Length: 116
Image (cartoon, rainbow, N blue to C red):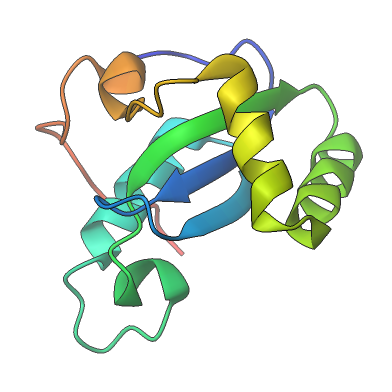
């Protein structure tokens, strides 16, 4: 499993057909990806990522400070799809799913939700 060098990440997820994008921010990218995956089959969830099966990582940026990560997330969320696509292309022009890059295998064998 990849361990982030910094504490906070802005990330972009998509579904299998790459027809939708979701932008999020987290202090633990690996665990957040697991939570999105575990939530996908929850019939009671109204979350965007659950409704559209958005579990595939296509882009992420790391930040040292939460305020910087939140500001970047808000900036990207305001963009049109075309600009978001260009951002993804800067580091992932083939639009490959990066989940295995992060974990080594996807889905990982040991998955759990954080305690709330």
